[in-house]
Image (cartoon, helix red, strand yellow):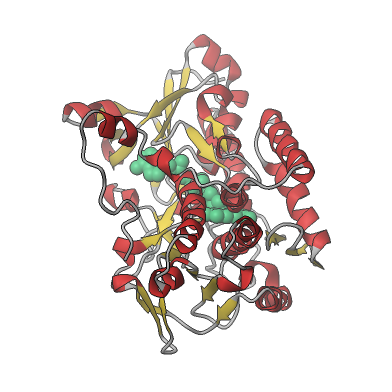
Length: 455
Ligand SMILES: Cc1cc2nc3c(=O)[nH]c(=O)nc-3n(C[C@H](O)[C@H](O)[C@H](O)COP(=O)(O)OP(=O)(O)OC[C@H]3O[C@@H](n4cnc5c(N)ncnc54)[C@H](O)[C@@H]3O)c2cc1C
């Protein structure tokens, strides 16, 4: 039984934030009812994003609102605050954060005291200083990026179909993806599949007119599924005419020309950057210990090393991998660890409040599944290797079993079933990003000279 009133603050509403809060609201039911415990979840978005579904959302197989889990509905015994932590003073047990309201009013950031801190802001794209990347590149970590990219790709087909300028057409039909991890490969494979299908509705476009390029700095892709399955994925993508360039880097994408380290140059309007992640920069705005790579230094009990009442897990945390053969290895940043760590973390906070011994986190990576487009996939799980349709099917079954809430599972399953019965949706709704454009024009605004910004 927790004796005093305790406020547990969870920074981040992703995998770790959601699963830790779920565990805590279940384990502290009585304390929450009596008011001796309070759980606050601070997250910039009121939803958790199930990132493994982003490639399918980009391809239109799952609608964006089913890729996210509404925090307020699922965490009905927690207080969800939509805001962004700006700094954390753990010595004083205080977080400083901004909200939409403070930003709008230009008001100073708010402060919130806490007793226990769970720091789980995840990771951000690891962008390198490549010329033109900041201006023209797009990442693939959020639902906004996935849907923006879908609209953008379909819009490129519209542009290519409506121009006689070969330069504009080539640039519109060339899609460059940088980074051969699961985010890059799955996003490329799903979008290529969708765009190839979409060309049948354009009178002057053929699938062979589209050029898809995957640029990977190392000699392999999809390290998560092992070497053999990674090689298979390269062969499968090349069979589909996707230009996979290993041991190659993007050197520049200034002026909408992608320049690669092997000397190749492509005019392109699409550069998707998925070349790895780095810990979230908020970690540097705390007084908590970080590793050389900027991750939160944690113990196998998920305590922040040497900082009582601070806890960490997921992409942001360097948690020792107790199953690794070489000592000193950290758990890799992936959902498999994030979800399992969150459960141990939730339990350990309760153990610590009750003066009980803490559990140790230990999980051996079991492998991974990846989709390579509709009905195509690759998997290496529990030592079993699968490819093609069985791997794709396994990918779907696995993620359906993992996506949080029965409600979401049912909706995703319904969408997949309907998609099997009807034709794919291939319309670009990019104008949704500018909902006032039509009214501004009607209200006397200027007609845009070059609405597509063609280069
Ligand atoms: C496209 C894609 C596909 C993937 N597929 C797989 C897969 O198949 N298998 C797998 O194991 N892993 C996969 N991953 C990786 C997996 O999604 C991550 O490892 C996992 O999300 C990490 O969980 P987390 O809680 O640490 O971070 P996240 O889930 O990213 O959550 C971080 C949260 O913190 C919030 N936040 C950020 N800054 C602040 C702030 N200042 N204040 C408050 N909150 C903040 C964010 O908004 C977010 O809600 C994939 C990732 C991507 C991008």
